[in-house]
Image 1 (cartoon, rainbow, N blue to C red):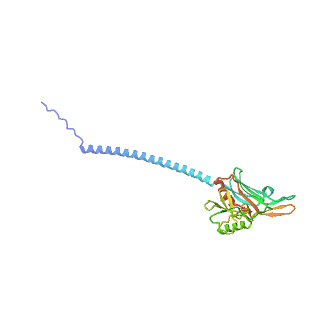
Image 2: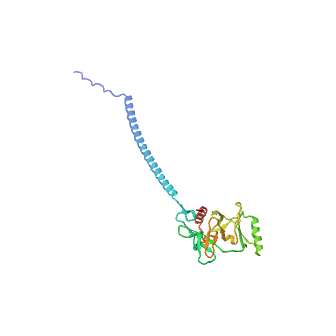
Image 3: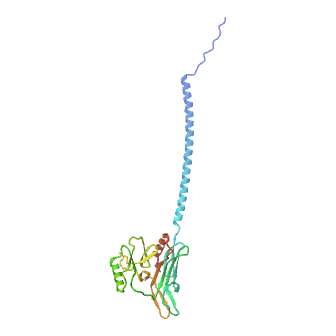
Length: 269
């Protein structure tokens, strides 16, 4: 009996090779996952930055819009024949050089007028806000039935008004205490005023550190040296006394504050 040939024994891979192969496959998979993660993350970052940039640009545009509105002119320079002022947009001033500007005057035959007889300030709705009107040929006594006083009104001034009342046979004035009132300081064509609400008070004193409130005829008429008017007729009269008044229906503080700025800006040309 012939001997049968024997099959060569099959060789198996060493276990170390198998482990290395598994490790390499795992490493490749992990690297692939890492690359995908990094690509996805960078894409999100780019999108986020793009959105932030767009948001910043929108914000800049919004800011530009705000600045654009802020830079728009809200006032303009008005100039008349004799006066100039800075006015809010759409406000107007009327200078009068005729009888229409006068509050009081003595009649003459064949009268004509020259100079500034009156001033009126109108707001954007063409509502009269403030007026100054010429006064001529009107007199009065020095008596004061009322005297408005601020915290810096001197006692000596109050005493002098009381003595002037007594001199003409009148009682002491009723004191209107404004010492705790809020007020605005106004310098209008060389005269000092204070505004409390829609009431204006003129300083008739010469001391800039105090406020001597006009009373009686001085509470209603003021001499303004920077403007004047003339009345020509049978004889010529030159004057610079004027009434001054904020319209009683003007109570809006925003409008009144704008008026403060307007009055402070008036100058003679």
